[in-house]
Image 1 (cartoon, one colour):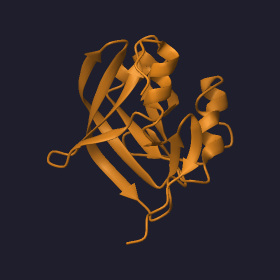
Image 2: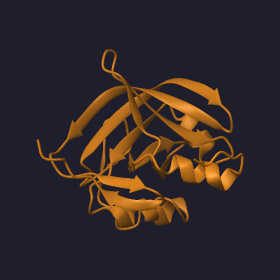
Image 3: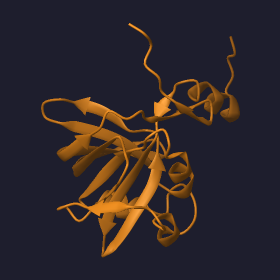
Image 4: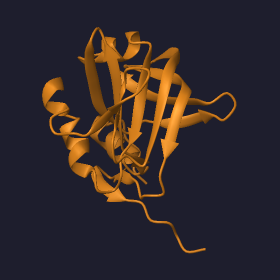
Length: 163
């Protein structure tokens, strides 16, 4: 058992928890914004609430926290390249050659995603060096395709265990 206060050891321990991989989008002041995110989680079924977190020092922080809402696209197992594309580069480059659908909210969802959730911001919660963004789900959809995972700092595929 490793017990330390080292930041790298802490990150390594956190990476032992596998997560799904998403791209969060917003439409703010006439521009589309997007970022890769693995902090997405369900919160409540009634009312329908989800959350994700954003670093307060992120260059896109104002767009995501002042836009009034966001859309989460849960990436499919074959969309690992998109996870990288939406994690780096300019905002215009992030959307290059990516098929999207503009929703009634004016936000974008990525085509081919296994699920999507279009949300209005319900609450912002200060949490250390991040804001937790709590969203009220206004629309959603899903498919039966396999999702993309992230485990120990690497992309992974989720597979159901036999019954």
